[in-house]
Length: 196
Image (tube, rainbow, N blue to C red; front, side):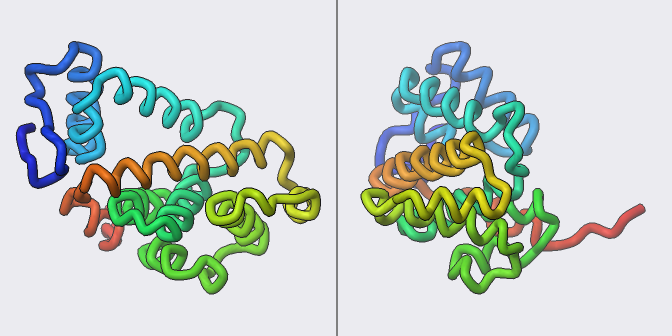
């Protein structure tokens, strides 16, 4: 796992990590076929690694959320692009392509969600996420009302804001650490596989 080119900080050897951190990384590697560089980079500080991924999982895998996996990734891609985070746009763009089964959607949302082929409901979700990301001090009652008109609940709004805020942290740490996206992310979900 030692590859300083993926981060400006030392990336620890897998064998040197606490068992729970090592097991988490091995589990991801077995599932994905590679170790996403965010895991290798954040292993630099195991306590923060644990806290980061615990909060990530609480937001992105929360039972009872009405946001689909693709919609959550839309939020990540749109706000990460606004924050200039190459790692998160590339990595979560791959996940968005996989979850949405749309090869172009992640790129379209990253460039400008206002012109992406999404539903008016999804557009309102991203409008709110972008406001929380860029000008949170301007969030007001009319922003909630716009979401209610599209059927979002207060719990949904919490999800949108939580994902936006969490990835604001993630974006900034990825940028400051010089985290590079794995090459595998660039092609994932771009080539449609033929059904057997």
